[in-house]
Length: 212
Image (cartoon, rainbow, N blue to C red; front, side, top):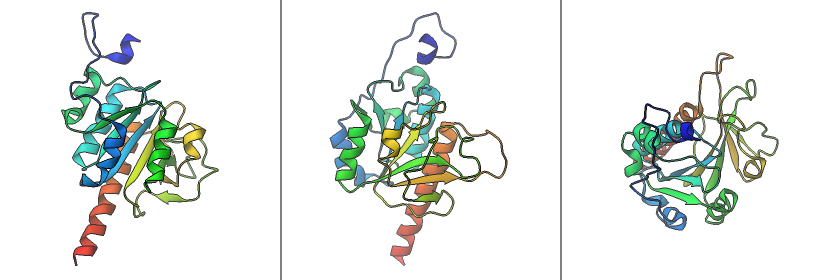
């Protein structure tokens, strides 16, 4: 358990701290359109604090609206996460929810699109942090060619188990990351960064086309 809280050098003492504090989930939803990129990232069973911090760093830099973590079996946002986030966790809205499925339902009721990360058809089980099955998908979208429907929630699953089926069934579409080599080269923070960046690209392109 100690190693999950902090993997670096220590004197055997660690405290769970999150100085910025959690925000109410409904407030985060209310304010989603105020972000440059109206995208929330929800972490399902992600345990590594470094990956969570890195995702927060990417999401904040790309203008994201916030991070959502489950109260139970969720990641510890302590020293390791804060270090990996390079200060982003002090600025990015973070909501902790008792039931992630119900939280996703609340977002859907507000008309927010729900995306899940999924591996490509040829290497579905090769990309960490993706679902193991996408049989319920109504759409599968190539991360390099899709136009995001915003506002949105992106669900990222754990590297070991992927996304739970109960959350998979709630997704409106799945985003695939085509890989040109059969090589397990992306962890959940890296694959999340690719997808978040694609959301930002799509939003910028859409804004540019409206401005013309």
